[in-house]
Length: 100
Image (cartoon, rainbow, N blue to C red; front, side):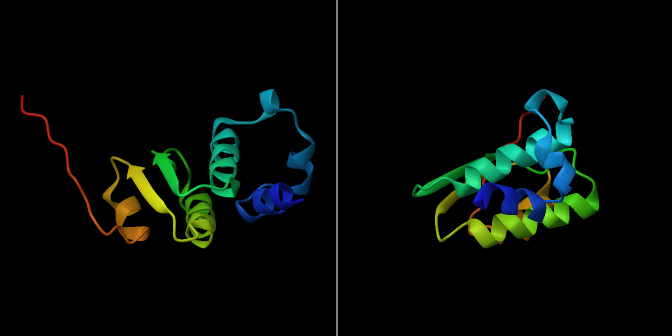
């Protein structure tokens, strides 16, 4: 299926595909959420800290998957890591700062 192929692209092993949701690690659950978001149809995608907690190799795989599946949709990215906006070639960046 498209979902299985996508999960393999973001670093799942074929054996991982047999696991129940409760058996997934936090990073695996995050990747499932990203795949679900990217495979749904719609004009816009909201990504809230999508790469948080992923190691560099996994982040790279997931980032590539996201880039390939944006399909010219409006994308809103919320992140604390400026690298995420840069890697997704953000057209506009709104930086929120709080004063103490």
